[in-house]
Length: 88
Image (cartoon, rainbow, N blue to C red):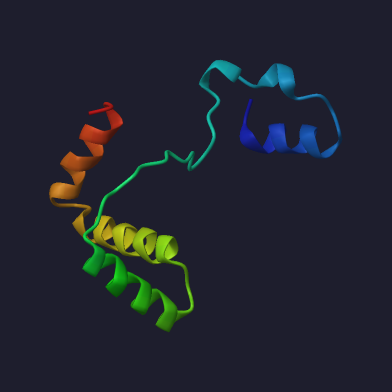
């Protein structure tokens, strides 16, 4: 079934559960919790920058890591993506 047909069926309130392959279903952007130890000085610097920007330390770290990964894509980032996809 094409996506448009599926959407129309869903929008009409019809049951689409039989049209979905639930064995392949996954949550987009599923989170995985990780713990990272930083030296106290680094945490203090992160906190100062986060406070200045009006964001949390966690938000700042996630933003900076996402930016760095984005810059790496196309180069060695490709090999990192392949490695992480295989669970390594």
